[in-house]
Length: 124
Image (cartoon, rainbow, N blue to C red; front, top):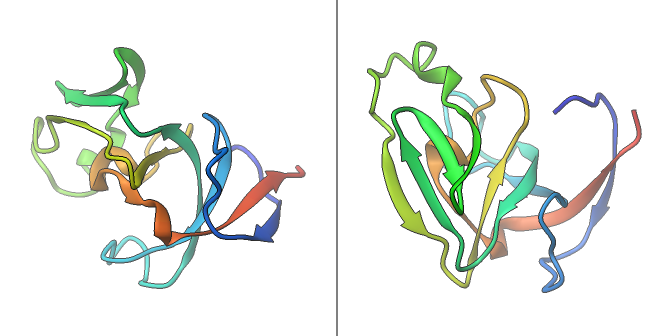
């Protein structure tokens, strides 16, 4: 994220989630990049029904280009390793970051809504 400080509000998932909302969730199964239980903050970039496509190491949500998968070298993965497409299910969202090289839903896919533990607001 381009910010260094956030206000964190501990609340369960809410049905009025919008694109661009900052969601807070605990990491699970993302080691060694993130230790299980670490709090992560990412943008809600894909909502139920949205089509996500990773093609030629580029991520698209509903046909709109998001960014490249800059972390392939760091992850020691060859080009095309994460290429796939899927539709986000009713109990999921896709969380992404705007930072190049961010480890986010481009790599691990959608997040179950019940994993959201709160919301954040960037303060600087």
